[in-house]
Image (cartoon, rainbow, N blue to C red; front, side, top):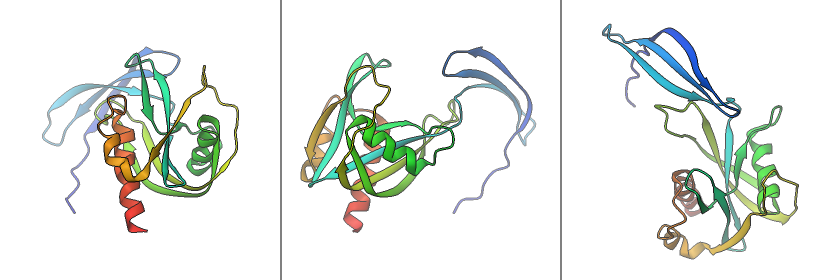
Length: 183
C-alpha cells in the first residue's frame, strides 16, 4: 500500500456560483512545500448516490434514458441520489423499483466510486442486484425509462454499443462481472 501524503491546508473557501443542484466553491490551499493554489470544485448536496447492476434470468437489465449533458438517450444501469434518512442499500432497492420495475432480495455492495474527484466531491455506491422480483414505485423521471434486456453471456458486446458510454456504468459492469465470476 502506498504512503498517504499530507493533505494541503485550506486557507479559505468561498461559494462563487450557485444553482438548484450545485454550488461552485473556490478553495484556497497551501501545500506542504508552501506552494499556494486556488482550486474550484462543484459541491452537491453530499447525500451520495447509488448505481445498481441488476441481473435477472441470466440477463443484465439496463435502462435507456435521456441525458441532458450529452443531449442523447444513454443506455445504463439504474441510479439516483440517496434520499435523506435513507441508507445506500435502501436507495439502491428504491431506484431499481422506480426505474425498471424490479426489487431485489440480494444486493451486494461492490465499490464506492468518485466522479471526477479533482472537481466533484460526490461519491457513488455501486451494487449488484440479484434475486429480483417485480415491484414498481413511482419515480421522478419525466418519461418512462425504456427497459433493455441484455444477455449476460454477451456482456462484452455491450462495451461496443455507442449509447453505453457512461464511465460509471462501464465501471459498474466490470465490477459486477468480477463479482459474478467469484460466485
